[in-house]
Figure 1: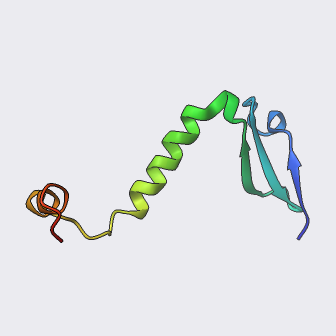
Figure 2: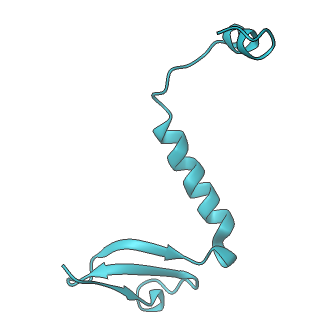
Length: 73
């Protein structure tokens, strides 16, 4: 399937945002100008990391204290 970068002004008129679309003009990826939208990207990325880590095992405060302050595992 061939993909091409298209000017976002034809889709949503947001400067600094471009979409990679397939032959059927379906969006497949996005290119973000980080000079214009760095804060937006950081928020998006942080949200993804939070969701990805949601099922990670948790530590109690006591476990963290022991590990950090006392050097225990």
